Image (cartoon, rainbow, N blue to C red; front, side, top):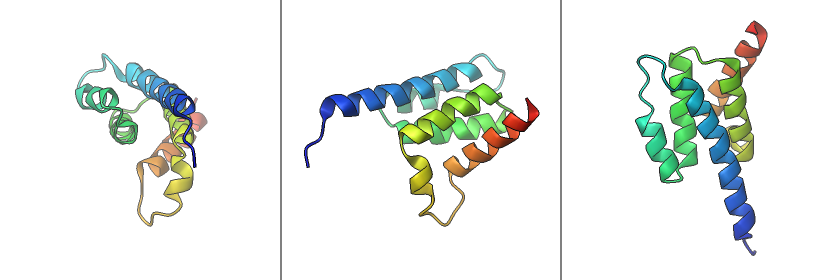
Length: 106
């Protein structure tokens, strides 16, 4: 199987864009340290950055747009389909629940 490096890089860039946008929506809020998330992004650890952002958003009542950004990133990384094979609560499950709750509120 041949890996299309350009397509892979484009996918990573798109996903990182969604994660960067979500991170920016939390920037400047009191009590939120985004340095760990930024470190993960800089090392292209997109899954870890996603997990970190889900935790931060859940702890700090993030807005609907934040959860929409994370939803786009999760879809790009195909995390929802992977989550079906895990017996425990994952960040993707939390993201979906928060997205649904935030959608209902606003």
